[in-house]
Length: 109
Length: 471
Image (tube, rainbow over all chains, first blue to last red; front, side):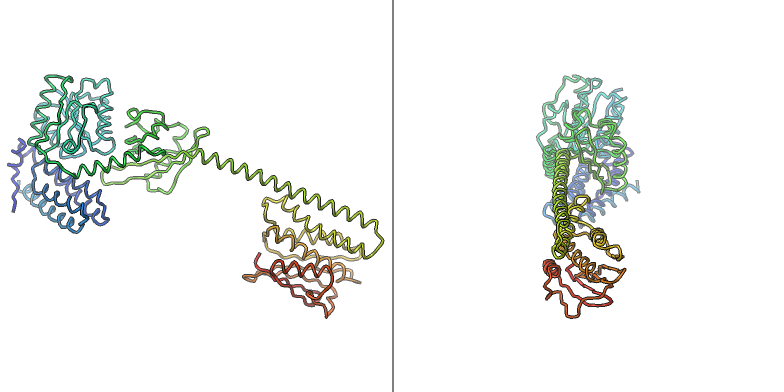
């Protein structure tokens, strides 16, 4: 199980934790929205919308050093290419679990 | 304090850049798309502008070229900050940018930003970074490449088509315009991007366009409007693109001038044809009237009772045909005439010309409005003429008044025309098919021609029932 340390993540980009928290909050909001769009696009098998949202989450997670999200998006991207939409749905759930971990860390801070 | 503008649709990047640059002593403004950026630079002259390439509304490349054209921004350095830089070949110097940084993890991206800003501060706008900075920190991602290829395909198609495509923000500012639309507006892309559509079109169109766009925004996408500019005609359709983030309206303007011109030519040709056909009907009617007059003159010369009767019958038949031509000539419809109107006039004419002073004949004609073509009107007219003439000549001998009734019954697939007089009736041994007179022969022949049948009976006078397929 991976643990998120706000302190370490903030230090990695030479930010104070208090400056880092708004970034993480924005990441949580935008990723939540993108996951909703991915789930809707899975139902209509719209690969373009899925791809575009994967791109957004992947870019932001890479910026912030949130490696687990980047890895999940890599996998989702492959499934999307192959049209394996049920596997994308499973990864959406994984991603939500990771988001909850980050939310819990934020709440404790 | 040096000023920076950051244009990126990713809120995390904007938040990072604002915090990072502020901490490093810069005044920072952020814009989540090119439209907002262009509004900001109206009264904020930044020293540095960071531009993402993939953004909604105005694409980054176009935004860079618009900013570079601004004289008041000539000292401003433009830095492209984009993930795309790591995935496709970018000639950012040709675009007008001074440097290009590949987006990556913020820890290394921050260092690259500081480095570029320091170098630019030292060397001013003469400094051009020859290579994309930060490529070593990112791994090549195929997702963006695929998105870019798909986008490029779409753009190639849009730039090549002859219809005008204009994409508008919900406050009607132009965020995309294809080549055909630029030709239509006779303006350059840099001049129209971010400007209000209404500033670029004829003022006389404003009312209709605003009304149309408001309807589109309210979900009424079924409508299109037709507008003209002199002799040029345009069909305008629109689609409201409703996404969770950025809503736009796509206008499609199609030049239908040629279509309109052909439509007008066709209308003119149809009108000329109608005039010609009317002229033909008119001439035939006149010629038939002349034949009828000649017969009339001949009648005045003849003492022979049989000859007079035959000539009168002949004249009635010719008049009935002439009347069809007259109706077609005067009517609006060149192919059909109203049967009720025709029968009414025909019977009235016959009664007028046959009835002598001691005999008064009334006619009761009950017909719905039925339009029939020329090929059916002529035989029907002759049939009614024969039946009426026969009744007028023979049914009322010794009587001072009589009634002729003609009615029309709808029988589903067939119709019935019932002709009845209240005269003395036909002799009991008469059958229409077996009759040897010219009149009855004509009736049976013409009824057959109309693929119908005729039945005759005595019922307070003679009753002829003509059954015909639906007219």
